[in-house]
Image (cartoon, rainbow, N blue to C red; front, side, top):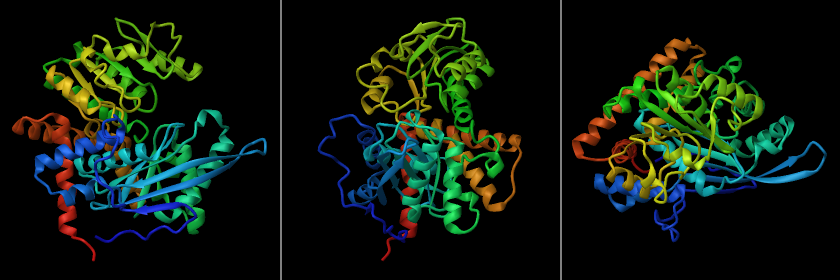
Length: 440
């Protein structure tokens, strides 16, 4: 298969390293070991050989860059940035850019792999990618974040582009970050390239509905999953872990659909109200104070306890690995819809399935963002923009179609939804790889 031109920078670049899918620390639960375990299960189910397994388990390209930053006071700091392109078999790579202090290469590898399966499952013509900088954006001014973003972008320029790899917002980044990336790339190209990123401001060619697309997708799937479980959404309760890009709007959309959202948390703590939280008032409080903690319309709750609330629906929409073998047995929710990437470990998956809990996997549940990112990319290429209602109707159609496909596949083979979704996605990527062949 034709590879992209190898980047030649002062950074470390690795194209398709000859590494085994297994690792010496496979007993340690990490996003990467979880992602590899899910792939191994799908490979076994599909009957694929070791060679294809290794190809699908190994990123096609990895780039590690040093990102120096000149602080506002004139001092300098040095951060490390990453961009991993997992697969190109179905199209250019696509994935978010994360700013968080604990970002490392293995986390980015896992997220890039999950993006490959997500794009394939929703039949979006992309491969998976992910990027990140190990930085805490809360410790920096807007000017410092602009400088670090532009420097990172300049370092990864050789491997990104609207036909190569298209970044998008993730934890710690937003539409302003995407605007800086777009401008940096465009200045180096000599002309404006709106298709280099998605999730950018509307005034720069962003799509209507992109900011809330992941949350809307989560909500469409959550309502469908509740109904499948025999629950009326208008009589159901929910707890949402995370009140950021995904969780805040997911809580709002669920409440608008009639679901009683009784508990919400963020990284600082949680609030609870058995009669249901006023999500709009909670959002106002969070914007004013930076946290849900201290909200007058609810009682304080330990953040970890939110996962064990007696609710019908649990939406983990924060970070990876929050549901594990140490707490999965205490989860009381009947339905879990993953708003975050990788919030449930394989061990927790087994426990939850044995207990009859319906878990809707991340590569299906939170795919709304990449669907509307694809819509934005198409609009940029056409220089023609759709109305918000057009975007929303197309998003709902794609999400519910994928839900029915995964559900039917799972029921016909007595599989969990995660195994069914991963197997469907891996099968599509493998078929594209087979048809393209190897070059030379």
